[in-house]
Every structure is written in structure tokens, then in C-alpha cells.
Image (cartoon, rainbow, N blue to C red; front, side, top):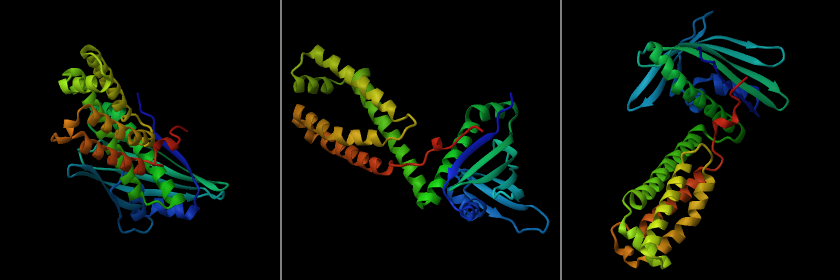
Amino acid sequence: MKNKPIYVELSIHSDMDKLWDATQIPALHSQWDLRFSSITYLPKIENEPQHFLYKTNIGFGLNVQGWGKSIGAFHSDDGSRTSSLHFGTDQKMSIIKEGKGYWKYKPERNEITFLTQYDYKVNFGKAGVFFDTVLFRPLIGWATALSFDVLKRWLEKEEAPAFQYIRFFSTWLISFLFFFIWTYHGAVPKILFMHPEEVSMTKSLLSLTMNQASALVAITGIAEILFGLLWLLPFNKVRLFGLQIMVFPPLTFSAILAEPSNLIHPFSPLTYNAALFILSIIGYIVSRDLPTAKSCKRKR
């Protein structure tokens, strides 16, 4: 079955010329579009489309380099504009072989509806089609939508794209760290191996029997795993960071109260939780009002 073209639409409060420049001038375009690391226009030949080269860094020192050409731009009498594109790459490592698409700019009252639709052929035969369907196409569609929202915030709020991406990826990096911390501490010392110190601290703090303390430690472990999984869900994490800011101080105090000797351990709960507390504050600050692909329409 043939995949549907990628479609992304977003309303932007901006001047038409300002939006046009941000999307048509290579030095500006590459700042906000997550799909490109650099775009370089080649010398323009009269009566020929504008040709360009692009590069996309994919990590570990690897990059995909390709070609493109603006095959037409149309300015309608109603003020709308359309820019068409033909692109591709000769690199065998690229999932994309060749494609075409367009950008459309439609003025509506005090805003501009900015949209794109594009499709492409893939390399690697049926394996490439399968990989594109289950992973790459959803990922490149998400990257397009996220980039559109970064562009919108740049034009409307004058927040530089680089700073937006730093905040976005820092938030997710911290989120993955807290996912690991909570699930690890819930599963390993509380459920899989049930460390004696976990049981003894619970027993001492709440004056429980050994069996009651063991059961409570297991329940706490399950709760920590579930809380850790929340960090992987695709929603803004500002409230989770705020919750941790409130939770870490009493957790630290209770751990010290239950076992004062913990203060002299190599990994004291005082220093360990203090680090997580500060990291939660940083996460709370950088995660507010992040760009999101959810702000875009993904279907016509």
C-alpha cells in the first residue's frame, strides 16, 4: 500500500515577506528546520531553477548530503504564494532517494496559513518501504511539524530557534534520566532484589513488622516504576518537574531520619537528592512553553 504524503499546516501571525524570507533564504531556513543542517544555493543560471545543496547531520559524524532545486514560485492575485521543490540524494545510505513537494502561504486576516505537502521514493526496496512506513516517515513528519512550531515562535515571540531546540532536547534528556532513575530504583533495590537497607529504613521510620515493611517496599517500588514511565509520555513535563521539586526535600529528610548513618555513606541521600532537586529546578525552567509538533494540523 502506498504511503500518504506528509502534510503539515500551521497558522502564523507574521508579515508575509518576513515569513517568505525565513523560509526561502538558506541561512535563515537552516536555523529553524530540523531536517537540514545547512543549505547552500548554487550560482543561479538564467532561465533555470534555483539549484542548491543540503546537508543533514545524523550523528556519530555521519551526514546525508543531497541536491535540490526550486522548480517554481507563484504569487497569486489574492496574496497567497506557492513554492515548489524537487529534491534527492545520490548517497546509498539515505532512506530518501528522490521527492517533490511544495510550500503554500495563504494570508487570512491577521495571520498566514503556512503549509507543506511532500512525498518521496525510498531506497532499499521492500525493506526500505517497511522502514519508512513504521519509523522514518512518522519521524520526518514529526520533525517537520516541530520545525514549523519553532518557526512560528521565532517570528511571533522572537525566540531564536537554537535556544528553542536547546530547551526542547535538554528537557527530553533530563526526562530520560529521570525515567531511568525512578524505574531503576523502583525495580532493582525494591522489587528484584529487595535490598535489606530499604526494608530496615521503612521498618524503622514507620514502626512496622518485617513483613509489613517488605510489602510496603514492594508497593513503593511499583509506584516508582509507574512514575518513571510517566517521563516517557509525550506531554509537557513542567508539572512533573514541579512535583519533584516539592517531593525531594521530604524524601531526603525521611531517609536521614530513618537512618542517620546514611549521611556518611559514599552516596549520601543528602547529596544525591540535592543533585536531583537542582536538576528538577533546571528542568522546570527550561520545559516551560516548549515548541511542539502537536500545534500543527497533520491532515488536510
